[in-house]
Image (tube, rainbow, N blue to C red; front, side, top):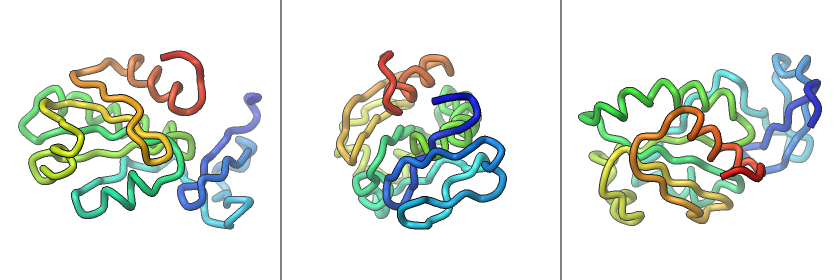
Length: 152
């Protein structure tokens, strides 16, 4: 991919769209389904026991799910990182958050025993579990891998 365009994945149909950087602010739409593509202002999706299937399992592309708790100090430290990365990777990797205290069914389903824990999905399937606090460069390395890169 050259520096003059960006690949944005449609959150509705999963199609990868090449959008010139100069057009990102114009509100680009998916070439296949005509749904608006995600913008830089995107925040992490909030996942619950009730919407997990819709937000994660049914999502056609890669997802990084941050399992956190309000009492967890490392989770509080990394929260701004996930907010920033959600905008940076919008249309490439979906960034989502799950409060394990309020959503114990999903946490139990994926055996989340400590927070923070990152769950990496692709095409609705769990592909990796990363317990513990990670640095921003480590998180980005995993995001790039999910997005189709080669480093892990």
